[in-house]
Image (cartoon, rainbow, N blue to C red):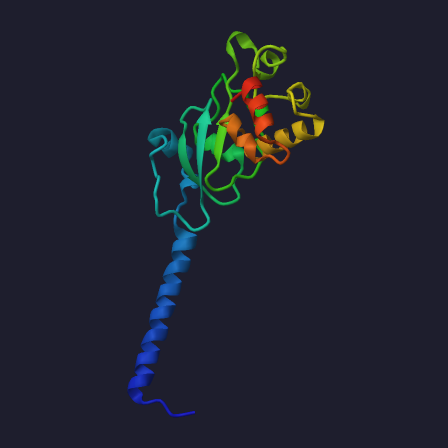
Length: 198
């Protein structure tokens, strides 16, 4: 192995020091910065959806859209591993009209996910009760396996897959999202569009 000149030793030493400084800075930024989801409740209430939102968030953060019956619907940045309950809380919490029983609040969030908190229908009826009739549309947010089973082309197995898909995604904003469920083809999608509402 050839010997290094004094100049080469100095250059390599400077490169090593620079790499150490960059690494230390990256580690400090990763552990020391306040993530969007850890904002204090007082700051969250004062600032709403825009407060603290930063496009240069921490690595591993999730960005989710919270819609429906919440006080401050909007797009929020939350730490990786957050649950639907965290997203609802970050959006100011559910309103008095929210149908929280229709949302799996324990589901883990995914980046880019939309969390929809459905609203109770007027007159105190819930979405599930209103969808029980054969003629009216069934609420996608609260539909049961039995209600989905009444739709042409949907059996108990597919109905169960739809419920699991809805729970896994923390609610659904559109009937068209069910196209991703295995076992649902174009003809079934037409039946779903005719009998379901978001």
